[in-house]
Image (cartoon, rainbow, N blue to C red; front, side):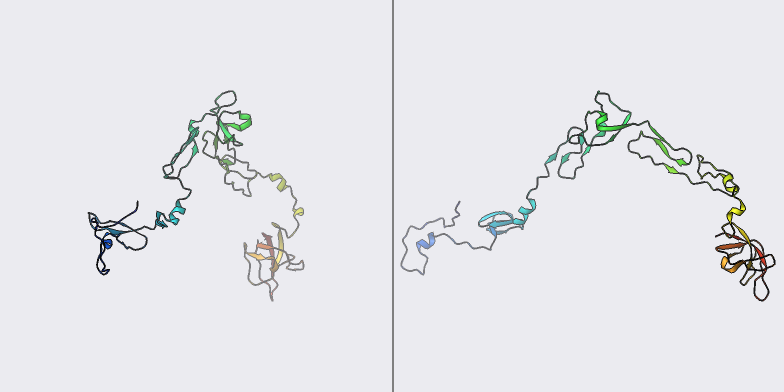
Length: 287
């Protein structure tokens, strides 16, 4: 529709010769209406009144003389669907609804019945899935070709030295079996076997005690030697010293047997060396 703005009264008189005054053709001509760029004519103020310029929001724009969505808004909604669109579920799937919020789809296990090829419902078995069947939907199938089964009454028993265990009735619970705290072995223990309250590695004491004293050698861990202390101080029983400060010796204090390796504990009493020859005593290697 062409917009035309004229006076309601149209003058039928011909124009006069004086062009400096309003003539009939001037009165009857279209009015020129001016306004700012990217504006509409209208009235935002409540009530009747003069026409006003209406500004465009950032989401609207002119393409030539056609008003439409701005390029930015058009790009942001391109390829989108309305949030009233629904995701519908069936065949054992739950969690559908409108796209106005995030949806979580899942298999409704509570309504499923696991059936083998003969139609027998195996309610006492826990399925251990090996592969996806078809498009992922679980239906009637042969157990041998779809999954392996474990009877849910099967029990994992923790015997001596272990704890926890249980049956497979709860499909959501993992069974964790652990080792109990080891028992303490002392030098006076002859043999300790695993028990229900703890464990220890059993020791055959006959094999240990059958080793002869001569088989252990001298200067090795656990051996005792007669040695002379070669530094300051008087080591009392229980004093630990480095082998570098000791010398293999005779009962008379003659030290000519060399320096022992490792670390040693005094099992007697020794007087320091120096101007007076030190005495010899028994030392036992602990490291």
